[in-house]
Image 1 (spheres, one colour):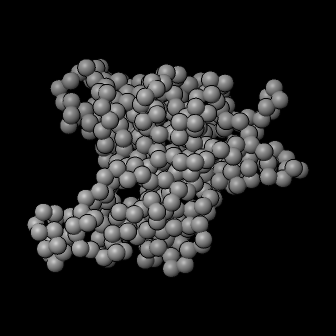
Image 2 (cartoon, one colour):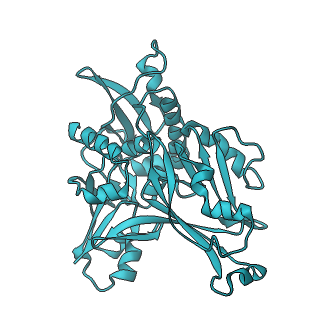
Image 3 (cartoon, one colour):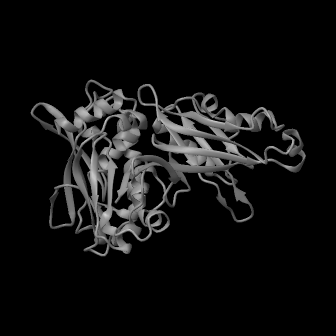
Length: 384
């Protein structure tokens, strides 16, 4: 546990950037095993204490913060959910945390009895309340707290991105370091003349980075067509000036473009000055028709990408080289497209943890198994 905490502090000092993690090779400290014994394909972490009711408890390597009120009891820093719960535990004079969640054997029963996505969303809502009450260290980003907890539990392999980033079924995804955004807007016929036929679209690429304290922000990696294309000032700002429009915030959320009943729903990025404000802004955005609210409180921001495609990418290291893949790409897809014909036993996958260390992902060398595994930002994939 001490090693995990030291690793977490080092990661924060490095700014949680992919370049820092790449320069310093971090050790493999645990395994994530793909198990399919209970009808669920689960990624199962290390040892936990399970009970006959189908639940388990694990210790989360996260020190407690200082309650906002001097008289605040530790019980106010607890979550008592039907499926997921979190409790502070005093050990050797230090307040740490235990989490209760479905065990490997209990997942099938819990998924039958409860709406697991709704239960986890409620747990995250309560976790935001605890952060607002200063139950956690002040310098820890919320996405790190969430990931530390999620990494302690068995999770459905194909849905790990939901538990970490809210991706899947919600219509949005929480942006964290290791992701990149590519914005691309095709030029209309009357705009093409301004580029003298040299460009058919304008585009910009942004990397999600960790900035000062608990904030995340966007850093522009490349841009094309800002000076050449004759498009509106508002369009240029939404494509080329995202860092200044959103600034660094504790929470950034991308609402994915999708087909609506009568029209296509454009992509939107929302930013809030505290993570606890994001649920309210999300409710305002998804209200019919989906758009940025007319009135936004100070410290919050919303950018609407009308006519601009927003592609979310994951930075994955493949055979020692950083590559960008569409977010949600499965290991099976990469094997089929990039390494077809290689023996499945030749593949190895390591997953970066919230502490900055790595876990080795172990799976059966079958096509069915590798299709279950979704690649995440920071993964290291190799084959011989």
